[in-house]
Image (cartoon, rainbow, N blue to C red):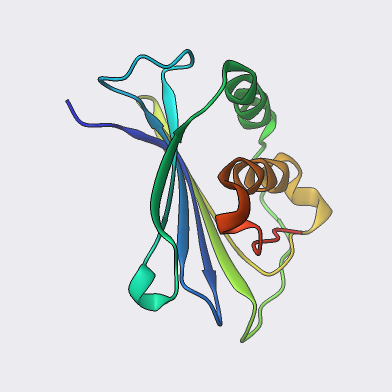
Length: 134
């Protein structure tokens, strides 16, 4: 059985290689949380390739806490521009799928969406340190 992507943050900066930070089910592994973090960025576009690591149970608990706090509002402000970074956060499980898209910095009403994006960037480490969602 292949790994299942549960949460994915896509960052598409204007002047760097696009990057994907993925939390996947860790089928066939024996890590404590049952989940893995995968960071993908195309080396042909200046990225660092693919790196995968285990996620600690404490980090998983923090991610689930942030996911539980996300609310969908009818109006969520955002700016539009020509340079900067475009973000897409995809949350997918057996019950449904949610997708959030934004450019540049997040407004305060986006709440836990920004915190979750920042947590994924923190877990990804140096490969994604240039991403800033707020």
